[in-house]
Image 1 (cartoon, rainbow, N blue to C red):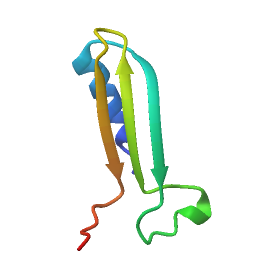
Image 2 (cartoon, rainbow, N blue to C red):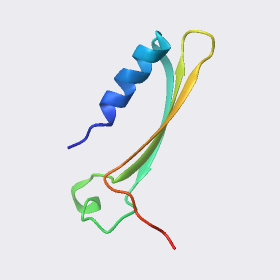
Image 3 (cartoon, rainbow, N blue to C red):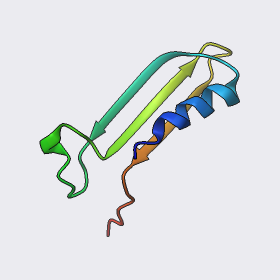
Length: 68
C-alpha cells in the first residue's frame, strides 16, 4: 500500500503550517514490474512551508535495497 501521503500530513502537523512549494522526483529502481503499469518504487520529495521558510525532505520506497 502507498503510505507516503501520511508523511506529508505528519509534516504539516509537526510544522504547524501549510505547504507552499513541492519538488518531487521518482523512478523505478528495483526489479518490480511497476514501470509497465505507470507506477514507481522510489521517490524523494522536498516540501517548503509557509511559516519561517521551513522545509522537509522525505523519501519513500516500496522496499530497501542493499547495494554493494
